[in-house]
Image 1: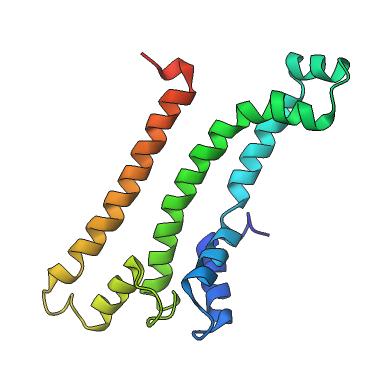
Image 2: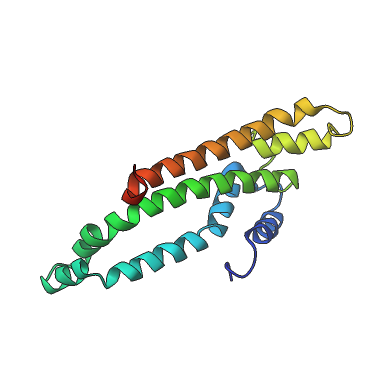
Length: 168
């Protein structure tokens, strides 16, 4: 179900059904996390399935090691780097998803926590785009772009650290 329906549609439906009074920053974070785990889980599962038939895992299995030891010593080191890099990309996607929800008015309550999406929402609510008040949008857009770019840059750096074929 989560792979067929786009995540933004699920986010809108779930956020709308929660109601304005119950939507806090934590609730929105849980809703975003609830809808964004699917593709990472599929990719990690595919990697684990490919690692399951490797020689060093079969050797550990033949040696009589427990399943927990095989997972922690033979599979987890190969998957951990991908999970960390996927987490960084998911954080960047979650920031954008919160901004999208808040611009639509489905983000956290406006009196609770100021977020980048809420700043965009209030700039739109006060018609900053009609009054040529670009300074209401620019810092928020720049902040979202800078955070997203820095997280992607960090992901690229970690890819070069974890992937020996990319090293010079």
